[in-house]
Length: 452
Image (cartoon, rainbow, N blue to C red):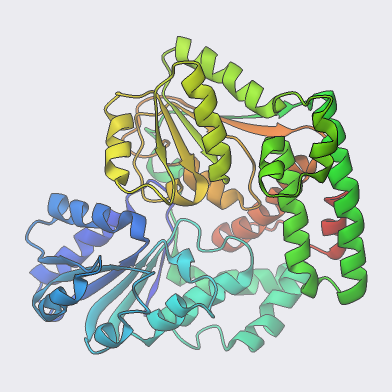
């Protein structure tokens, strides 16, 4: 049997797994290699942790354009580490090897069962399988099914039967009895510990939602864009239905979120016709960016060490300009950062007090315990992703109280995103902790309300 190690972020799933693989080797059971598949951003962290905790394990990292030269060493290794991006490319080689263990780190990477990475992972031959994820369920129950398809094929039926038996009753109708049946079925194979249970020595975490009021011209721009997008979305849903309107809806929401962050983001996308009309009269600086700079100034006088997360790398660039104008030093990590470790060490060593991170690149696999303050510049639909980012700082090894600030534009789509976060958080709590939350799926009314 297989399962998911679903401990909260920061409780040591990586060293737990390394210790287990070491025990397998020392007992004589590791007669063929184990394979760890991880996000590209953390494969070198895995290798470093193996060297630190289990130096007797022979580890091989398959990464980079010259990795084919190392394929011949796979069979002689105890542990092979590769990435989700390379898994489909190297599938033929990896399928030719029988594995003692296949471990998927940040296993939510296979939450979409139709992706190449998910299909390739399921095709591997192994004696045992393990998923590591603090967020095995982020958006819907189909993600949980995808993980169990990899772990124990057939355990939750095929995708259509699972939808009829569980997804539709739970997500659409809020069927609490059916939800508890699913919880009971997966609970023996989904082991979860929370920080409250394990890391009582962790310092407290204080979360503050800080609402930011638009200035007049930014409010006018927001209303102009909102009205146009509201009509566009309603027309599209009326023509082709909700399911086929996804691209239009997401693009419309993107524009509104960008106006909330900084009007220059909308202008940069070429969607700034409304902005162009307003530029003659001038538009104030983004109210949220002004608020962030006020906070940074205060935090720097208090000698704080700050993580700033945004989903928009273009927003991080605008923040950089403001920091530079004020003479502040910072590190930055996005998907384009070449030497991630150098940026991490710059912040962790205290050389710079501010670390700018994109939510996608900086939200997993990093230990940033030098931080005592986390600022989420813009909210994201998925509370689990935000929590993962926060837990780069609030994890074992942290000895300072953590303050988490979420900047939300008042009376905007961002406030409604925060409300939707509660729904998704409820679904995850129900499946991981057995809580009866009465969660129901989003409807077309929910989506239309975002533009109201």
